Length: 487
Ligand code: UDP
Image (cartoon, rainbow, N blue to C red; front, side, top):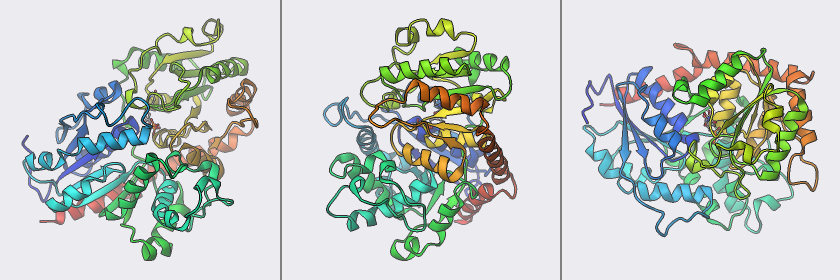
């Protein structure tokens, strides 16, 4: 592959991403911004092992700018022995990355010119070793919230301070320096059991954040200002540990979506066109989210009883993991037959009020549509940013990873979400609670304050991204200038 252009005016940068749409989507958007807004040539290094249908569609769409090249890494098979169907999500992801990065050095050397910098996501930190050998500076792109970044920077210290118990058993919330305390029930999945591989992998990768030349954060200055300030100014992050510069460059979210390619995608938008403004609840649980059969039944009844309009991106029930489709987003079997797992007659009874979409919807286009009044989300960070950037308040239904932490921040600190209440002793959110929350978000008084706050944030997003002058735009611009200045 030939990368044309002068290295000083159009630096060559490589971007490396771990599997999962929640990483691939923001890193690809970041790559597009480097190419289109900041004049870089970018090689997007793509781990192809077990690529999901959604990943293949996204990376092979015709819309990529000419100075962005997707480079498929040769797949290293990890299914024979290393991982099984039962391997938990983060361990599986980390093993896939570890094995598939064994070719990283030769791939970087095979590029026509060595990149000025490599940008990696948080689970690709093996790249630090390879790039040290090649003298390439590595930047981390943190795909999650400022709150998770502050917690993750503090985790190696917490690990040495708490020696005799699990963090979830601590009597008090975790006091992250300079930030809101994290309640033990909100701790991210990978740190809930310190004895298992999930924790070891997480600790390994976040300990290595300090090796980065800089950390790009997918947020903007006004989203969690106190947390961002703490990371920049609290002595812990600079005297106890040596945190690299943190650049708020977000929200980096999808700009456009190729809706026409999927029949259900354009159906969603045509349907929304016929609905009143702010009247529809959009129910979608990210790329991985799945519900139990019992919970699906409660959701269906709750939506029906609420008598509110809805779009429900539905997946076949999974009584195992709540992240059941993380590795095969958009391509899962069985989801095309919702009638087989929904309450009898539900589709017929709700056909004038709702639309059930199997498996995958054009989320960004739906959130941008004026008929969408609330987003019932699993609170993945990309979904959160997409909702806030479009001024849509949320019903926060966290399922896995760090989503409980996000849900609490959204409800208590940012003020754009409400969490349904789970009754003590119950494993599911009941239909009555779902009915209550859905009604409240579409026609209740309470929604007004949340909508106002969401609108305020939407405006602050537009300001942060504006070019020139926006804080996120200028932040990235500063780093690119440094790359350009290097000989
Ligand atoms: N997404 C989508 N359609 C769907 C479900 C998800 O386009 O039906 C996209 C969504 O817009 C977001 C990403 O998939 O960009 C999900 O990322 P997030 O961080 O919210 O959650 P994860 O999938 O990593 O749990």
